Length: 87
Image (cartoon, rainbow, N blue to C red):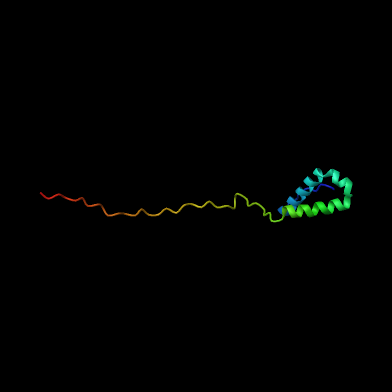
C-alpha cells in the first residue's frame, strides 16, 4: 500500500481512516502474506472504517467560548433588632 500524504482538501475523518489503515498494515504484515494483497487491503479498509465509526473531529480551541459565571446582586437583609431589656 502506498502511503498518502494528508492535504488540506481531505477531511479529518478521511485522514484518520488513512492513519488507521497505515498503522494496521504495518502491524499485520504476516497476515498480508497469508491472505494476499487484494483480500488484505479490503479487510483492512473495512476494519479501519469500523474502528473510526462514530469519531467526530475535535473542535479547535479558538472556537470554544469560556462561560463566565453570572454574578448575582447581593441580597440586602433587614438589620436584626436587638431585644431591649426594660427595668
